[in-house]
Amino acid sequence: MNEVALGRDEVRAGEELDLASVDGWLRGIDPGLEGGLPEVTQYSGGASNWTYRLRYRNRDLVLRRPPAGTKARSAHDMGREYQIQKALRPAFPTVPAMVGRCQDPAVLGCDFYVMERVEGLIPRARLPPGLSLGAAATARLCENVLDKLIELHRVDFRAVGLEGLWRGPGYARRQVDGWCERYLKARTWNVPSYGYVRAWLEEHTPEDVGACVIHNDWRFDNVVLDPADPTRVIAVLDWELATVGDPLMDLGSALAYWVEAGDNPFFRMTRRQPTHLPGMFSRAQVVEHYLSRTGLRPASWTFYEVFGLFRLAVIAQQIYYRYFHGQTRNPAFKRFWILVNYLDWRARRIIRNSR
Image 1 (cartoon, rainbow, N blue to C red):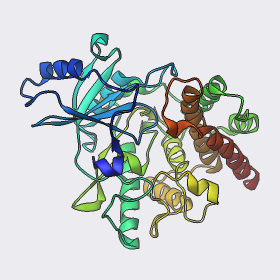
Image 2 (tube, rainbow, N blue to C red):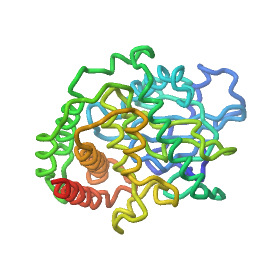
Image 3 (cartoon, one colour):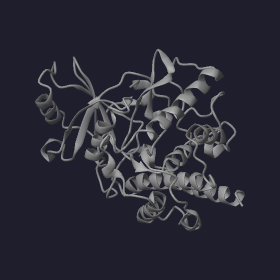
């Protein structure tokens, strides 16, 4: 991963690793590790699990662990995240290679896993320093990222051994119910009830259009690009929320992060990926491209767009809840409550305009 693009910093106070303990565990997996304790830095780009780079003389690794503090019952499951990537890699080789998973609480006090670091570029709110793409190259990058999502959705989840993730039809309904419940549990005094949006989603939930492996956090800053061809995706990161479900729910969730150059000023301030650049598809073009390549035809796209925004609001609120209650001191989360308020307004506006 490109350190500048990903935001590689010194380890944040309160989020330090017991490096000697981790090193001892790793040497049990790979006795050939050279040098003493690895150089450790922390990636600052994520807002959920804590991610660290461990650099040995002869090996470059990434460690993922859950944050401290309370969490949603099904969130931050390191074993699940590890097993999904390990199962997917033979059919979807853009998943990083897994090194090992630790379930011994004596090492770090939590479950964690380690994977190979992928050398490349990660586009965030801005392209990595020194990288400049014209409109045509930006369009190719956009299309390649979308086509990689379509490639994932075409993986046979049964053939790779992930049928245990499928709970049968009704994925969209379960998601609406589940995210509504999570929001109410994480609500603080300074955010809206989302009562109108929740009621609308419950009333307009469609039947599933299909079942496939979905990433559930598909963004440009979760892909690694080839330095020799920055329009080509060589790795996909952050599989914490991956499961088997409705592919259009995955696309709707991805578009919640898609900020265009012509969006209102506040929404532009939330941009975390370079979707504003000349050549990038609009949200409407993204949907058109995906539907034309997959042949799917939903009765209405509005549900998926509104659900994606609501889901993003819940994720932001869950993170803010941890900050509000002092379970994390990361200052990046201090004003997430403002985003939660804004997303309620935006979802309501889309609903009104769809009538």
